Image (cartoon, rainbow, N blue to C red; front, side, top):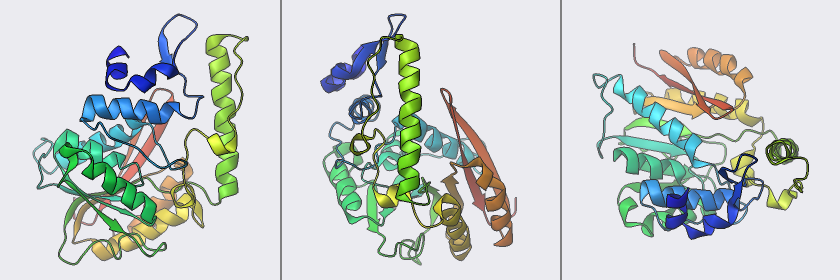
Length: 295
């Protein structure tokens, strides 16, 4: 913890002691996640200047790194079990967001080249600024503004391009109301967890909606039909670019959507479909990956 605070002194104000006297980060404070991310990015990925607009999605880094590393393992299957590194590996991050987390981790961990796409122009410009402000990222990440909110790969993948991977953290919710309701449950669970660790005298309060700790704009959190509709469209469009992408992939938040998406992928001709579970602490997440080549 001390090493992180040295790289990002602002993190010190969010360090608390738990009931057994160990240092921990107080994530009930909505400003703790950005501060933690700044420290982790500086310490592990040599990214010293990282800032996103207020209210935009600020995902915890460890879970995002898990996705990247599992995809690296997936690529190794076609490289004699060895993870391919270097700029010859090209990755498309669908919905890169203002935070640019996946391209940062991928370029710094494996030397891959990234293209990030997003429907939100502010996100695109912010991500560009992060890259231009950090020398280790320059000339490794490019961005495309997706003008059509109802398209995913169309208008992004050019006819002359090939990608080894596509990845995505899709909008989970069907509406902003649904997103707000979910956030209230998360805040309540977080408060209960904090109280359990610090004792009944812990004076915790639920954060107000405007200060929710995960942030996120409309396009980042929800879309018509929610995650299932988004992934259904992704599956349909992936068939149109099957010769230009080795592996398509996306996170799946709702495990009940897995079988539905697997069925859709088979309908559009996917040949190899892989579902991978990931675990960070008490949280379990998963992603689905597919291609159109015979096994």
